[in-house]
Amino acid sequence: MAARVTDWGLAVLIAALVASGGLTLFAGSTGDTWVFAAHDVLGIGILLLLGVKLRRVGARVFAPARWDRRTIYGVVGTALAVAALVSGLLWANGVTPDVAGYSLLSVHDALGVALLLGVAAHMVARAKPLRRRDLAHRRQFLAMGAMTGVSLVAWRTQRPLQVLLGLPGAKRRFTGSYEAASFGGNAFPTTSWVADSPRPVDLAAYRLRIEGLVGRRLAIALADLPLVDELVATLDCTGGFYSTQRWRGVRLSRILEPARPKQAAGHVSVASVTGYRWSFAMNVARELLLATRVGDEALSQEHGAPVRLVVPWARGFQWVKWVQRIDLLDHPDYGAPASTVWSSLTAVGSGGR
Image 1 (tube, rainbow, N blue to C red):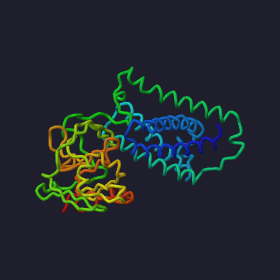
Image 2: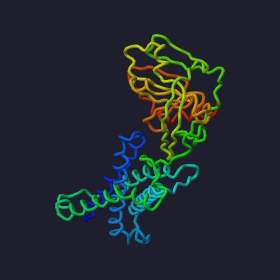
Image 3: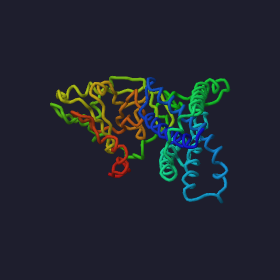
Image 4: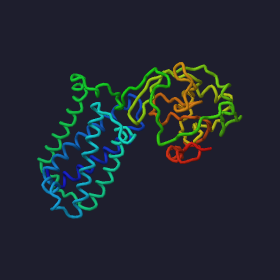
């Protein structure tokens, strides 16, 4: 395979791999399985193409005396690619250690972002434009077709092989997450999207506020939140675990109705005491659950007491914890994604007042 085709092929595949990895953060229902399949196939393709690349430049990469300034970009990019691929393969096969307090899957995600930046720097330093003759040869298309075929076969056979060999990776959910303490009440792992860690809410003073495009603003005490709805749903954390629980509380539709939503209210923003928030279309939000209990237990502080949002089809970061306010809007809450990062920097989010 021509050198320029290999280099540009790696760059394109890595960009696609990182993009598909980003999409997995929002893929929580079985209809999104294709996103994870695409991510896996791209990873295998990169592994094969990286082998072709190293066969050509390995003598220089593994001989520091032959390096020039531009070679360093390639070495760093190669190291990041290997680290990202190895961490992904280990996780997929059930090797799931924590690294400095973070799951190996989270480390894999961080390596993916670093890899994209490293490859971009390498392409700026050394990339040569593709020429028509680089792509015109029949051998290039045969090689690319063969790699695509091998990648698809490897992806399709990995799970059956894991089952046959009894490997832990066979027990992964389609998202890659491993089961943890299902139907065990508050026993499942505690995580935050970034680092939200507020002090316990004063239950006596707590009020759930419903504001925005409503005919009647509400401030509902915890004791007045009915325990009338139950939902079995799977919390699937992007850090790599999932836990199926029986959640109890009240559907949003029941508490929105007394607030008399205005006709223009097409979206609902659910906010935490820390400022962390996420928004949903009105027709979707009505079916979501505000949970105060998990199994037969009241929610613990770490799991979002006194009130946590349950979003059955979404990944865990959309399950807003420590819910304090619900705003009805005529548009999506465009600031919500940024709030999931800066909320940990607020006084309340960091454990102050």
